[in-house]
Length: 184
Image (tube, rainbow, N blue to C red):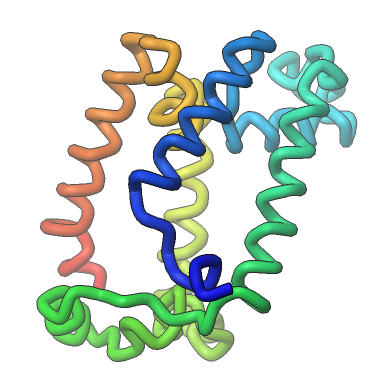
C-alpha cells in the first residue's frame, strides 16, 4: 500500500499518460478540460445567448466523464491516499516566505491565498477573480488549456499546440519572476 501513498515517478506516470493518449487517438478523441466548460454551458442553454455554445454537446459527453473521474479521483487521493503535504525545495520555501507565504509544504495550496480567511481580503479576492477570468479567457482564446494543448495537442503533433505550450512557459516565467513579486 505504500507505493500508492507516495508520488509516482515519471517513468510510471508518463507512460500511463501516453497509454491513455494512444487510446484516445485510436478512438478519434482529443482530451481537454477547459472545453468541458463550453459543453456545460451548452447543456445549460447558453446557445440562446451565443452561437459559440450552439454545437452538438452530446458528442462531448465522454469528456464530462473524464472531468467527473478527475473530481472523484482527486477527492479520494486527497482524503484517503495522502497526508495533504507537498515536498518543496527548501530554496523555494525561502523565496515563498519572502512573499509572505509561510504555509509552503503544509498543504497543497497556500492558505494565505486559498484559505477561508483570505477570501475576506479584497486584494486576494480580486487576484483570484481576475486570475480566474484571465485563465478562462486565455484557454478559450488559445483554443484549449494546458492539458488540451500540452498533453493532447502535442501528442497529435499539432503546431498550434507547440506554440501554445511555449507561450504557457514564457507566460509562467514572466508571471513568477516579474508580476508575482509585485502582487505579493
